[in-house]
Length: 223
Length: 227
Image (cartoon, rainbow over all chains, first blue to last red; front, side):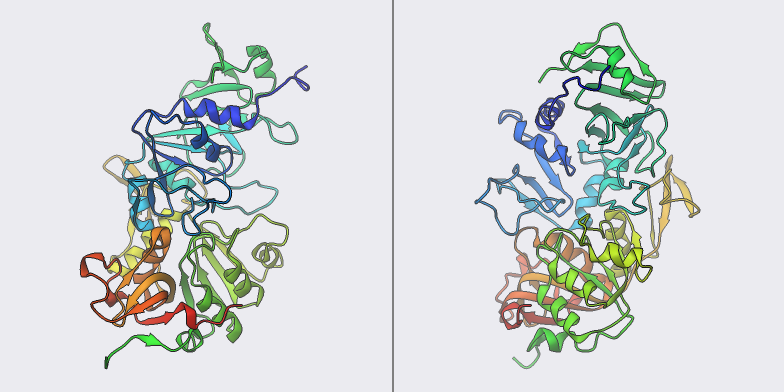
């Protein structure tokens, strides 16, 4: 049984995602776990953060007490101001996204399918939800990484064969980092790449809705 | 100066916004929003507004006030819900008295840009394969499927800026520029609430972000009674 197996915490998920951001890349972080990623990018790999609210090269989240009242990310959280920032209109912010100028986006998700369909804006039982900039990012960013818990609060798998929640984008996700595994959606199906410490591929399959393709060389999740 | 777009108060600047008007509201998550103008509008008790805004969550108190006062019957926004249990938009939507159109943020920006620039709409690659594009006109453009987006025009834009001169040129501070400068050109009448009003020439023409041609009325923020 996998019910009481230890899972990684949100900060570890964010640390693992941080390793996926190439030095010098332009990155847009979504709300939730993705926001934490900026805390784990080391100073040497300079990453340029992009925000839909019209800021480029903004710093990571501001420390409590040093918030600038004006400087926020798309989720309304306060950011540090750093040298080299640029401000612009939201029209330009989305031109950057759709125009392919944003290298990586990290988003949360309700469901991701075996072929990389993303559902992250509406829970059907609520009947409504916020899209924000997620559809633009799903369509325009070069690489979409999903950072999320592997299962929802009721234990339902969020990595599924087919999404049955309303979609944000089709076939757009290229990597999933969760609290039990790192997975790669492909046209052939969901490939298991890494497992969290103490988890076997079979145990990951047990908590996953998608049929996993399990290669011979599964790495241990390293941060 | 003989000519000036400066109004004495927020109340005077919003006095002619009628019931049923479409308003385009600046600010993101309530930060850098035209709070004085929104409050003045809520106080007037106008009805049946269509409110086009970035989002309704976290610090958007002035927008909440407008909604809670029953002034708004329709919201067009990428993020209209706060997700909190006391969300006035969600309550009104559930009660069936509020229409909510959830749209991708960049699409909303581009629809307003089209209106302000006199463009007959745009084809965007956003939302393809989702319910957002279902049943709508699509076209393959250079191998990429796109959905047609019509211009979205407002009657009034309510925005926030740092500085205005009397002829309506605007300068912003930080991310104030983002959504405020995105909505300003798409309305018949644009009203800017600013922290500082200077004489023409007080803003270096090189540093004007929104040219005065897009701005019809200016209100100094300090002349706005708060909440």
